[in-house]
Image 1 (cartoon, rainbow, N blue to C red):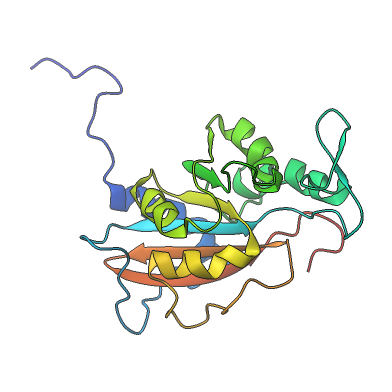
Image 2: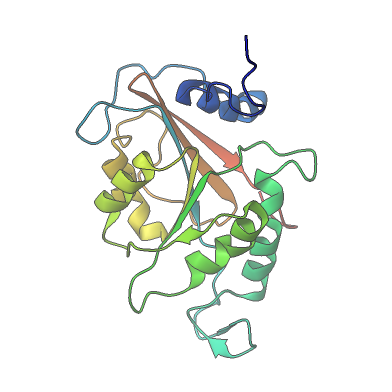
Length: 218
């Protein structure tokens, strides 16, 4: 019987891929494998297994101060020096390069965009995008959380979203995970955490993971 060419075997099932992605979270003590008390469904349609990770953009300049773009030009819409350092260290949180990654490698990246939007979200994940060799998708502005949620759930999984903190509650509602126990009503006054939402068999679970990237991170 002729042998199939190398690399042409059956593609892994989506659920198998997601289970492998969840392993680091389970090892970190998150409740990624624990079912929610009741099913919480996402947008209309048959719910697909998914993992959506949310981060806030890295640190912005203090009021009255300015950040700098890649050319050293001052711009209040850019990141502060600490924010630039966080962006540079972010790849280590999602890759095995340091041997201590507790979060899966994103297969898709989204950041807040739109005409006239500050560049902070995009700048935060650009070093990660370069490390993963995937693009940063920026078609949605803050306020378009419903469209972003649909795109994130349809994208290759897992997904990482970098968003403005005041839009996060709308985004969580759009995902259909706002009634999940343990989910804060608003993003905390922090830049050093990841919110991980996992949907399996129509049930969402939630986990907050500290980044521990820079000195002073909680």
